[in-house]
Amino acid sequence: MQQLQTHNEKLPMRIIGFCCKNALNSFDRMLFSSEKGIFFMEPSIKIVQLPCSSKIEPLGIIKAFESGANGIFVLGCPEGKCHLLNGNHRARKVVEYTKILLDEIGIEKNRLEMFQIGISESQHFDQIISLMAESVAMVSLDRVE
Image (cartoon, rainbow, N blue to C red; front, side, top):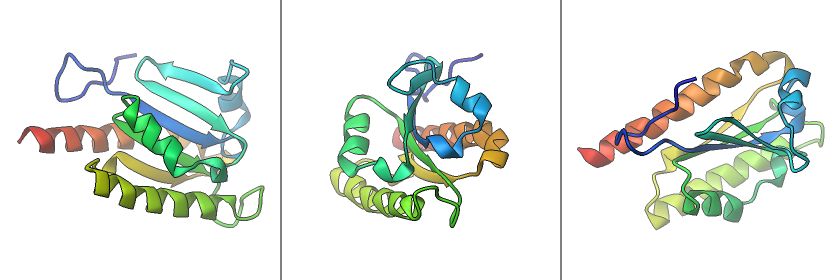
């Protein structure tokens, strides 16, 4: 698998995904090999499994950017299908609020996204990674120009 790159070919792109365990199908769950629910799809993509997308906090997202993430996404269940009632709704609010904070501290808000997919739609997971990579690459290119 080819490693994702930023506009500077020497710097690899780092994407972190915070994913609700209920939004992943059984195959995706098998990929979580560590006890902490963290796995690497390739060197540039880190996935953190959450019991629910509602467990994400603005400070955790900001710290992930501080640690060198170029892009971050939160993956939750579809609207109305959250296993914890309104967890996905809370996660969306947290992401929207965090985008405002990112804008205030000079980090492009397009580097953070929220996606909602159901277990039967998890084949779209690769598309989410591609969308995030494209979004981060566009932000990187805008900075260069």
